[in-house]
Structure formats: C-alpha cells, structure tokens
Length: 345
Image 1 (cartoon, rainbow, N blue to C red):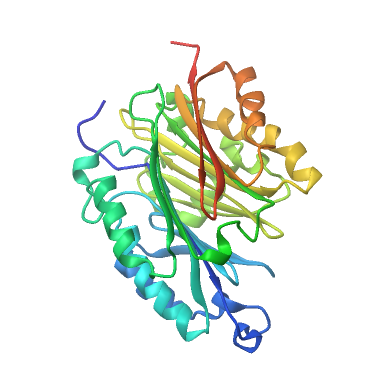
Image 2 (image 1 turned 135 degrees about the vertical axis):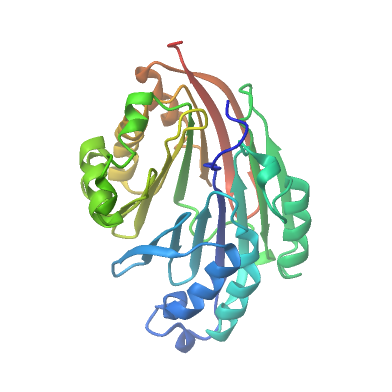
C-alpha cells in the first residue's frame, strides 16, 4: 500500500429543505433557482470546481473537479474526494436556501475509511472532529441526532454516519427512496489502466476523453437508459453522472496502483418495479467494470427490501460477503453496511 497519494474515498453530504410559502418555490424549482455564482461560492469553500454539467426537468447534475453535486428543488447532495473540506458547504448552503424561503430539515453525512487519513484537513482529521463540527453547524431545530461508525471484518472498511433532523422529519418524506453506495478498492490492474489517458493523448478535452472511457470500459452499459455526463482527468482518473428521470447514478475512479479506488452510487424507489428488478443487474455490471479485490456497500432505505439483493448481485462475480452491520438513523431509516472480498488471490 502506498504511503501517500490521492484520496479516493469520498465524503457525502445530503441536505433536505422545506418551505412554508409555495410562492417562494418558483414553479417548484426551489434550490434549482440558486445562481451559478452562488454554487461556485459554496464549492470554493469546499475546495473544488465544476467541470461539466447536465440537467433535466427534475434536477441538475454537476461533475466536479472532485466528484459530484446534485441539486433538486428541496434536496442537495454533494460528494467530494481528495482533501476537500465538504462540511464547510453547510453554512453557505443554509444561507442561500434561506434567501429562497427554504429551511434545513434534515442532514446526512456518510463516508468510508480514508486511505490517507493524515492528509485530511480540518474539519476532517477524524470522525470525532467531523461530528463536533456538524453538531455546531446544523441548526438547533435539527434536534434528533445520531453518529455511528459501522464496523466490518475487512481492514480499512468501516462506514461513518451522522444524521440530524427536526421533529417532523424523523420518518423521511421520501421513504420509498433507496440509496446504494459502493466503495471498491484494489481494482483489477487491467481494468484500472483504462482510466489513464494514453501517452500523447493529453491534447483531448476532458469531455471527449471521458466519453471514450465511458465507451471502452462498459460504463455506458451499466444503465443504458441514463443520459451520461462524463469527464476524464489528466493524466488519470474519471468521473461520471448518469441521469434518468428523477434518478441519478455516479461513478468516480482513482486508478493509480497501490491506492486504486472506484465508487458507484445509485438511487431508486422500492415502489418502482423496474428499479428493484434492475438493481441486481446494475450493481453487477458496475462492479464488473472494476473487478475489485474488496468492496463495501452501504444501503440506505426505510424498508428492508433492497439490501438482500446486494449479495445476490455480487456473489456470482466471485465475491464473498464477509460482514454485515445494520443500524437505524433518524430521517434516513435503516442503513445496512456489507463488505465483500474476491475469492481470487
């Protein structure tokens, strides 16, 4: 294992807002009314920038220099890797939302275990510091709070969770929605090499090179229905957001040997038969792109219909479930954290 390198494990923040005045929602656009300058200000505090974007009638999706941002009318999801300071986005987001007549009603912060924890700046030097920062930053009305580290039997794979919500959002409004977060390490070397720009290929734009990587790796086949916004970094690395109706998926790749990492995240509804039926195939295709030696999967859902399908998707790929932990969180519902390792050496 390398002693230093780029941190692939992302920090993920999900904020939900509500407004009492329908007129302030601006034809149900809500947070989508935030101008680009305001978003840039938020991202500047985090230490990242927008490199590509796509939108539909439901939400806006941005590929960042370090991962992704999704803006819905009453929900924002930011996922950033490297040494970004993600939690510093909370205060400016609350401020900009307030100007739109929206107030924060729930917050969820999750991350895996950093490969290079000593490289992380404040407030991310430890989970304890992150929790203290969150406790101090989220408004007092979000009084139902919980912080937990979900363990596993694999070294350097644990799941850190903080949630906070107000009294009316202990049970989430979107309780049919599930989120699946996959963190893959020790990628197959031949698979990882596809995420390096070829020698002399540095004159291609990130958008053009990203589209080529999407095609040659098979990422475009993970969810053929999705519109993909992709970007390749120089000399290596890749990010993509896929959007289909009100659902997103996202992939981020750090391919360097010694600390190779890839993540895949998707959302769906337990009431949508297509989502549930397609989940096994989607997960299987995503993991096959990278063929990792180990991975973790966090499934967040108000019901228990989704997480048993994870093993069904992964075990035929030669991956064995090593541990499974579950816990309940205000406003998030149930979070199930599973780890897998490849049977191959």
